Length: 538
Image (tube, rainbow, N blue to C red):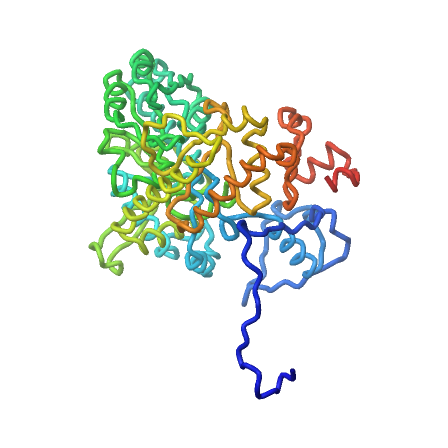
């Protein structure tokens, strides 16, 4: 039949293959070299100079003796290299990312990236005079005030560059506070819990404290009797995540705080899991003296494989003088009249000093501010309510998968759940890590848990408010499918992946610093730069 045949139907419906039960997926694999290996002397790209950029004259002694050893490539090679790497990467823009439990991998609106790419943000320099950065200082000041309202604290510092840096900042404040009271040497113990974020114990150890870890009781809460036995004149602080990484909210949290206060210690709230309690509970209302937020989790700035992060630490009134600095203060003017205000950097009178160079991570502060302002107070509470609804819907779906279980099933969950495949592992010999690798063949991310595995064969899911019911149905269907495969073809699951760039690694070198290569220079120095085809093509 001719395409010009007047008897043909103008919009004939062609048959379409039915959609498979699970989405077909195959990750691109390029076996891409390290960019330094692609370099060839003399290759050049095309740069775009800044408009009217003045020549730069460096002071004597500052200029390098030799040019930096940067890779030399043409522009199309650079574009090709990074696009290939991006195609080998799963991320929140590509996949259903509910498998990053405890990390709140929510969707970050792209409009917020537009803001931070604006030259007035992207081209800021930390050494600019204050009068030239009044706009961004106002954003810092306003976000600090928002976080004080969310937490109930008296003052917040956005100086830390990550959540763990904010934890360390709070520990430094705790240490300085006790030292100011003549108890710095005596109070040398920090109490935390098994299902609090490991950064709490790690930062306390780095700060020089002895760490006491409370294990869960039969209800899944930190054992309050163990806390009674632990507190005493050596107690500097309690560092606790609530809800913990099991998704369980501790209903006796105020009692925990009061026990620590009675012993003369401070109570510090790790709010990395705040996504399910925004606008519902506040740290200060439970009696806490300090808290921290992760802007790269709860407040929707990109997590970006662990960075660039941004942290915020908040303190009650007696601890304000010890905050890390600088902080932003407002001079003159009235609320709602920016023309009459000046914003300036100040350092609290007994400040612990800087946690990182300069003020904070400005692009992520701007993203977080934009996210909060777009939502408003009611929107923040709706974030929490939707996150809890999504989590409990997914909990219902996962519970229906044979072989999956929920520790402490009698307890309600907030924004995430730490599940267990113990029954499936005992039946099939397939372990949680192996299920996670096989799940990557369907284009989704999956996470087990922090070590040690107190919950056997764990997997931790946190859907946040970002995902639809259809997304959660698809994710649960993938887990159910892999569980069926484990029963029918356990070796097939154990040998995954088949459609992914990820591969199984030999972990033996992870505990051997002599093998670590954090940079290309270290790799060349330690391994001679020789790379076998087998090493390149696993």
